[in-house]
Image 1 (cartoon, rainbow, N blue to C red):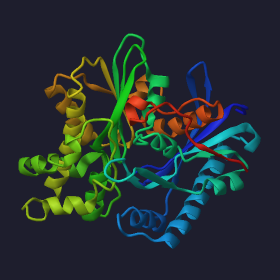
Image 2: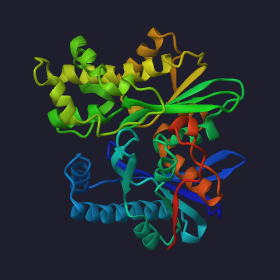
Image 3: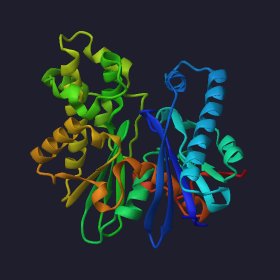
Length: 372
């Protein structure tokens, strides 16, 4: 199992449900997934992350303490995976750690910034491995959104020489990558993925997520609410564009629903259709032939959401969706693999961004190196 060209990728997304860790090797543009591991995030740390993610509620002490705690958790996830695969620090070229986003402000009226925590120095010290982190800010220094970053990885492993493919990543936020046969790559955030579905489910059922979409399936969507939600100004922006918890959060959702006489289950059903419709419309708005559509991310396990997404695509004469598993990579590990690949790009001194996706003025090498 040991391999001197092994990279580890760590990912904790907007949903804050777990830390995903993967160990991979790369050869001839082919990814080999050696193993994976999912590390839970304690409720207290998740609560602290949510507090730090609230615009205007800034607490430097909490930021520093949570940064340290997350660094420890990322290190624990790495070590658990290494133990599982009988790997030691000498077998690992680098760990690519996305960190946990607590604030994302695309460039606009105010300067853009994106802040991820999960102290990479701590990860390097505990694991004994080089760590690559802080992937977004270099792109933003060149005027980019700093997001989404996964389209470059999607192009690397999912490109087809004769078919135009769309890769839908449904995490807390959804994004799409458009991969053209000539190597062209575009992409952008489409809006909410699981973020509102999870938040509404937690509020009304005290469960972290709607398992397979079963609760939402008991409700019926409300047309008036759906129309109101779609009026969010994010959907009027053109790409490159990115978004996050700052735009789509439980407080915003409660503002949209507090005067409406709709049951919680009906609101959950509406949120599933909202997510599906906004993704499907983003693809339809591309106004170009699409041969295949694949889905990755945790949203693929919400069967009600996927059913609605397929229906929304069919209404717009788009292909039915398939899992990225059918083209070589299980959907729940794609993002973590992307950050292992971005770590490799940094080590190889190769660009990691796609200016057509992020809006940066140029390609650039992403990430900083933290040595043990």
